Length: 418
Ligand code: DCT
Ligand code: MG
Image (cartoon, rainbow, N blue to C red; front, side, top):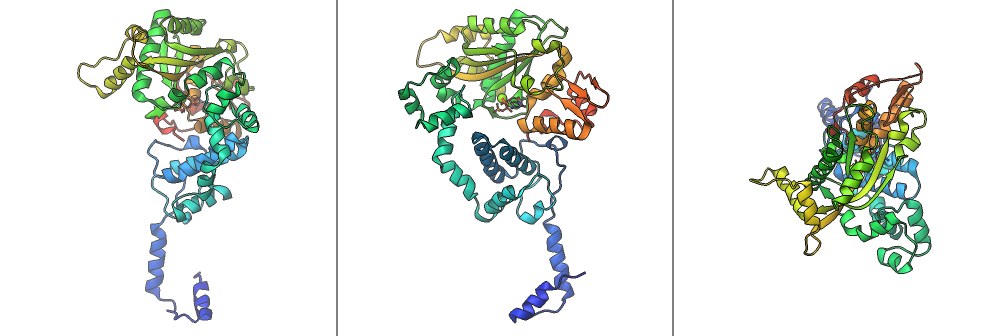
């Protein structure tokens, strides 16, 4: 059926009307075909999301609003904006008009208003206003201190502390993490490069080889997904013989400390993910899962080594841990930078789950768990996969097997950048 509302409207407005010009109609239809609507599956773990984002202006605005929601204790809204941004990140081309978004999942009214604003005006007025707001700026600065969460930042803001100098002058009691965070504020808010990550990796590998020959170290987090920079460097350690990894963390930490590589460290038995993932917790080997939050002192020489190694520059060798350590004691104006490093140890039986769980992105992980629970009646954690229907754990020794258990097509790390 033909839509003739344009015809009756034109008649009423007294405009000249070309009555059902067949040629014109065809042209209209062809234009519509040109701006074809996108389509994509609704879970981020069903999609392939590379770092090649064709809609950065849109996703930056949505991510900023997500961040603001998270900093305001509105996690639901935060996730909604993150999901919307992730859908746009997965599109093969830039969005040029709202009609292309018809039928796409995860785009709620609020996100669509933001997208419309950006498409029409080049920027989102809400995102811009948020960026300028004193509260957002203060929350960013204060939570930018390692060891300071949203709750603490809010308490300080209520007391009129909105910046670093005020915090220092206020003489608030700070815990050990926060003191280290404040001391290394500038370094820790400067993105870590791939070269620096490579230099840290060389040091961690040396530490692991020194304390437990045969143990394996794997780069996880954003750098495993191919990101060029990160806010930290994440590593997963294991040993091919089950049980041999026990006690690895304290040994690695004390080696690193003795070589002068640690500005701060705190080892915990109950990590974030363990605490959360109740149903999938394998009760017996849980206590072996350890995490160390640390701040590395990365010598200048090691950083250059990492960079040159990466570029494949002539005669450049990545600095060995020992050489880097001696450099720590060197003189001159701060010949090192502070880098946040997270270390995780997993028994080999859980390695694939730990690898999948710690590679990210955060949204990809959240979506994997949502998929498992909602679509497959399974519980996925960084330790195990539990099938609620069969009432048993499903074993896996590779990420590919876990995707297969979940009935998902395998997505390599570089395509998990949702
Ligand atoms: N992770 C998660 N949920 C969280 C925190 C972390 O699933 N709430 C997982 C996914 C990523 C991995 O742990 C490492 O965390 P981050 O270092 O915070 O993330 P990243 O992707 O490495 O980001 P960045 O490049 O900023 O370090
Ligand atoms: Mg990281």
